[in-house]
Amino acid sequence: MSKTGIAALRSRAKHESLSSVRSALVAVALAVVFLGAFAGASDARAEPPRQVDAADLPAMIAQGVKVVDIRRADEWRDTGVISGSLLLTAVDADGRLVAEFPEALMKAVDRDGPVVVICRSGNRSAMIARMMSERGGYTHVVDAAGGIRAWIDAGNPLTPCPGC
Image (tube, rainbow, N blue to C red):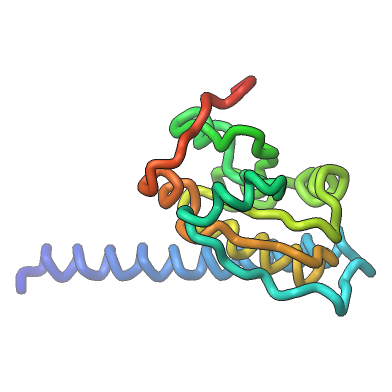
């Protein structure tokens, strides 16, 4: 292999390693912020978050289950949103938890009611759903597996983002 090829491989490995470290740091930061924001809210009654696929989510919505879309405004503009979903950005473009998110979530979502959390691909929503359940005292949290991408792939409808 040429020196250029080896350098390219090293560069890619370094980038992938930094990406893994960044993901781990985001998870730790989210845990720390949620621990502070939801101090004392943990509830032994809380169920671990379960996942729902895009084919089953419309039935839950029809039953009145609240959907919290935690993507950013640019993502909502790009794809549209699920009609009636609550739009609360959880993580900014740099991977940092939005400081206002925990309080806005607590004001908007009943801790004892069912709630579905959705993001772009399912990664952020899985982390947030786990934190809501484990540290936030939310008792019936559901993670939308595959995120809005899976929703779109299943042929489910979207509406333009209001006010985005």
